[in-house]
Image (cartoon, rainbow, N blue to C red; front, side, top):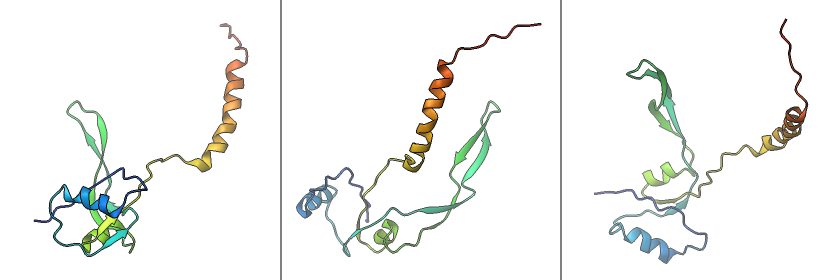
Length: 125
């Protein structure tokens, strides 16, 4: 029976013996065609966002869709696993748009200035 295993949060100092120990905890490795350093695959979906209605009549959006295909990059984790290799994919989960930070920071001083400005009172007629 084939089984896929995820091992995360490995330090950069991880050695081959460390990997053998970690994967060995899941059982005996029967067949491996190699070890590849990979990038994260991307899946393409048909109708990825579907609007639905809950039992109370409120709309919500379900993010799912039907998988159409995987990215076909030779360095992708999906390709490595499909070929029987161990895939080592370094992940970085910071989604910050660093290119926009400097532009948005210029807004901070303008917002602060607006908040400090004396408020004018409106009188009703």
